[in-house]
Amino acid sequence: MIEQAKDTETKILDAAKEVFQHKGLTGARMQEIADQAGINKALLHYYYRTKDKLFEKVFELAFSVFIPKIRDIVLSTDKSVFDKINFFVDNYIDLLNKHPYIPGFVINELNRNPQILVQVFEKNVQFKEMNLFEKFDAQLKDEAKKGIIRPIDARNLMTNVIGLCIFPIVARPIIQGIMFDNNKKNYDIFLEQRKKMVIDFIINAIKVK
Image 1 (cartoon, rainbow, N blue to C red):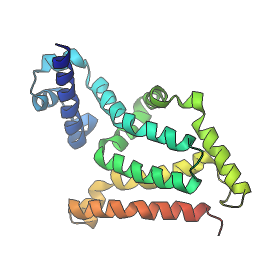
Image 2 (cartoon, one colour):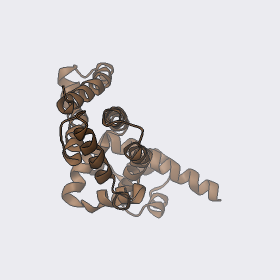
Image 3 (cartoon, helix red, strand yellow):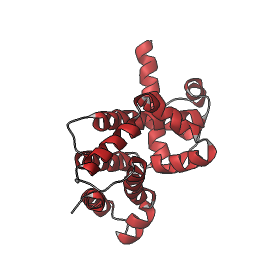
């Protein structure tokens, strides 16, 4: 019985992810998600009473794989700032490409319910308790003192990195539709190439020549 319940929830989450990817939060309908999962709408509501709750769960699951990696790489003592930038950009662009609904969700939630983002991060990695930004900032200051990088605040650095990673995903309809004549293969190649471009751009901006 427990296994059956797990299978049903897995089907729901897989279906929800598929529908949200194509329709977004606003365009998705619970009936459509139920149909995709092969269950009736009443059963879907038994597991998730509202579409928002279901979306939050899908969002949390998408980040639950990525966030521990961020924690581990930021807290690692044997990785340079450049190594951490490489890791973050490579994994973050991959995550966004696999879950393209995330940026839109983040933008909507920042206006509608910004606390959900804080809650997801705290639930998965307990940012406040581990002071991840403070620890990364301390490493940046240390490498700046050694003459490896130029002085920069961790929050400014991460904002720059995240912005460069997110925009091609948010603007995908324009980039893939116009720049690449709606050729998904060429867009994916562009996105893969962009990893190196973003890494080089960020590192060159802070690296002491």
